[in-house]
Length: 369
Ligand code: HEM
Image (cartoon, rainbow, N blue to C red):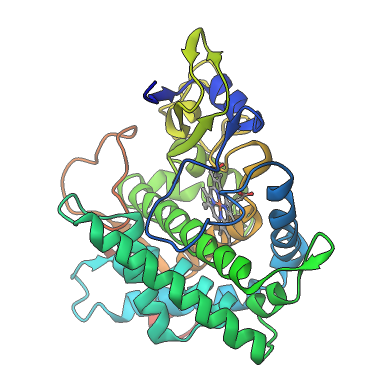
């Protein structure tokens, strides 16, 4: 029998599918972009998955990521300053997606992996061909991008093996998978997934954040609390517009979800956006409300594949909120009616032209430190 696609959108059902990884595997489904091998650990299931995930969980733990704060803040500050410098005419508009939302997570990834600026720029192009192909992009472009990224990481890992270094890639090379070391191919497959998992997601969240700041300035007041980014604002941003919207799973055997018959090998598509806006779970779910009493959302997934980069993701977003607050007084969209809250925010690859006015303290140079 031909396998079908089944969409699941209620919070409880989506969560039930994601936590039941014996019944709903990631192995067969998901991304096909011409990558040489599986993306690890995402495309492994069961015990094999645990073996690949454990080293990443150690490298991306809250404590490890905390030590990266100064480097990530430096990257962020430089990008915010470049946004303001790029405005030759004070009244001109700046594309915050091209200047900030896209390059920030890509540069953080480059820093983690010890990748130079030229390669970072190339990887971002390839990444976009894989993750956000336009409707007119031929499938061959996506596959050739995937193959090039695969070759790139194979080479990078082999160089790192020959000349050990102190960055995250260097740490991955000496990590243990169970009782053995990871092979070069396995490390390369992990790097590939890290690129796809860490760039588009953070970038999309930043794009949604600028959308809110520009159209709903009162929301911006809620983004900071006591001189720091408000964690509830960031969680609400992710609940309201989850950057990864659909998580695919393949059913391993016959079952029912919400009364619907699912056959073995059916593709089950978990719609995180619907789940995060399920009114039986979140009151007035369309409303962006950082003051709502916090309830766990599904933007980072659930179950054994739940995002392992969650600490880094939250830190990147918090630092972005803080550095934007420090440097930019006014963020304004083009004149006219603000778009409705509840519609899909602009994709991060679309231009988002905004007026940015720097804080007076930055203009007259009186900013301390
Ligand atoms: C706002 C930013 C982010 C969001 C919303 C997000 C979301 C997600 C989601 C929904 C999953 C589950 C995928 C599935 O079950 O099919 C996932 C997995 C994953 N994420 Fe993230 N992610 C973010 C940032 C990051 C970052 C910064 C990294 C790494 C540096 C990262 C690395 C990963 C990895 C490696 C997996 C696979 C985990 C596994 O299979 O065990 N993510 N992420």
